[in-house]
Length: 371
Image (cartoon, rainbow, N blue to C red; front, top):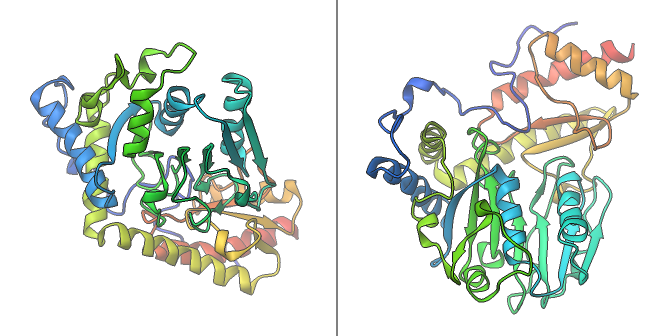
């Protein structure tokens, strides 16, 4: 029978992700709107967004955070085009976005001294192949495969190369060993449910040293330039952005950071996300027609949770349409390049009660689609 209780919030999309519980536009500070981002208030709000990010993530001393254009993709492209080429590079990929970085390295930058280690959806590549003398590129969480790295133990503390990590659906949801990371990128519209178009770039002192000591052989567009005459443009990491940001989006991000603080900070956000995953894990254990795409529990994402079903592609499409028509769950189909299935976002902005309410509807939709 059709369930009676629906999730209060049917937004289970893996990006942009749902807003924080209780979100209202009227809660945003609008004093900076209509002002220049170079004005005192504009710079203050941008700097606050940077400073609060550093504080809540508890970044190591000397790490720098900047707000850059182009979302997570822009931040990753900026890092790769600005820093790669000095050393050989190892790229690890196990889903579509990681595969995109492989393409950039091998076909766009055309680095000859590059190695690619690629795994199928649901699996991880062999990280033991990482050479500590090489630059290393990887995603912390595969948003389209539901597979995350278990830890960063495979990264050498004695490395001479840089680690460049796409962490867009991991930051504020997973424990990241920042001492192992030299460059990290993420976007506001993922874990925190912020608005799109802005990326966050985190640099270790080693990454700054690379920027100031190495000039790539290729020309850099203005939106990629982090140095001027061999010196880091420090203003980028203090609120002076490369191009014009949306101060409304900045205020939205600050609202999300305030909410993170209210639920116990980083640890509270991680705990909430892991709790949501556990609800789904219990459901999978009780139903033999649904399984995680991730091949083992230690690498199963607690944000973009991906599933394979004992159903045809058409039956899965029917399920997705039934759930959307009932306004129970929106945007939960697998990514277009991933194996057919479901993808349910379970970051901290999703309430556990909504995950619980969704489960009987999954069963109902599956029974309807496969009858």
